Image (cartoon, rainbow, N blue to C red; front, top):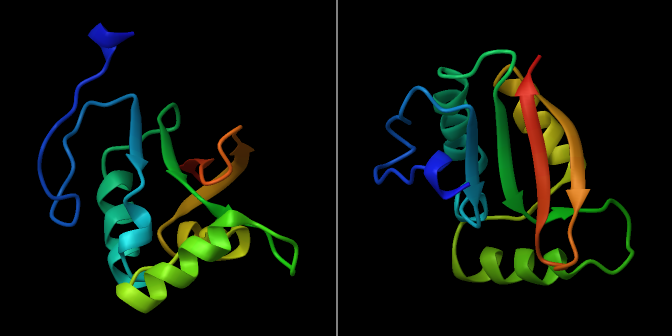
Length: 121
């Protein structure tokens, strides 16, 4: 697996490298307002085709008032930064605005991380 992964430094607000078969953002989307998140998604989309997946590893908060640890993280980010955790509906809307599709949300055993699998429409 190690031979197939390349970590590339840079600013995803400006551009992302081409040629990947999967793009992954972990623990970074929370830091950004919707306008910046749209910019990030658009930059990734420029290099996607039908076979490429975009994985966002972050909390995807369930709708309603049930407990979800991501709600605490969301509160902290709103107090200390301009970032937010996003609900499934908010993630779907972010994808829709950028011409992408949220295929599924994969729950992990670590309650702060979910994996949002995103593809082209």
